[in-house]
Amino acid sequence: MRVLLQRVSEAAVRVDGQVTGEIGQGLLLLVGIIEGDDTTDMDWVIRKLLNLRIFEDEQGVMNRSVLETGGDVLAVSQFTLFASTKKGNRPSWSKAAPPTISKPLFDAFVDLLSNTLGKPVPTGVFGADMKVSLINDGPVTLMLDSKNPE
Image (cartoon, rainbow, N blue to C red):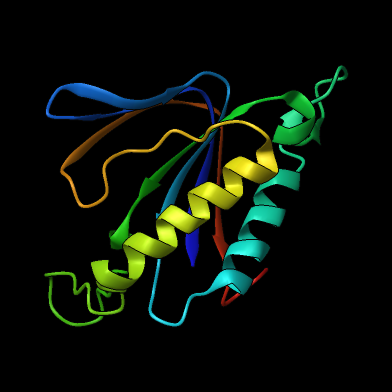
């Protein structure tokens, strides 16, 4: 499981011009899933992203987590995080899990994240053409990969 995490002042996702999810200060998550991902991957990613000290404290030092700040989280499915660009100029998406695998896992990820965070986690619409807008705060952008935890 890969998650591109962005600290944001605000973020929203739209489908067909309608807002399907939006947040104020917090984290925008772009979530990619491959075959073989399971609850172990979800647990690691959720534990890591909720506890990353990437929000400023009173001294202006990144020393607080989204849990500590009470920030929001917006999650968007993003199969392109597993693009392969080795060969030619057209990316291959063959590493990304098919929707029959990735949708139930994404839904479970959002449910577990919401339960752990203690509040709803808005999302886009799985498989839809989504328009994501954000104000990246910092900018702070991190990649989490459960198969290569760094």
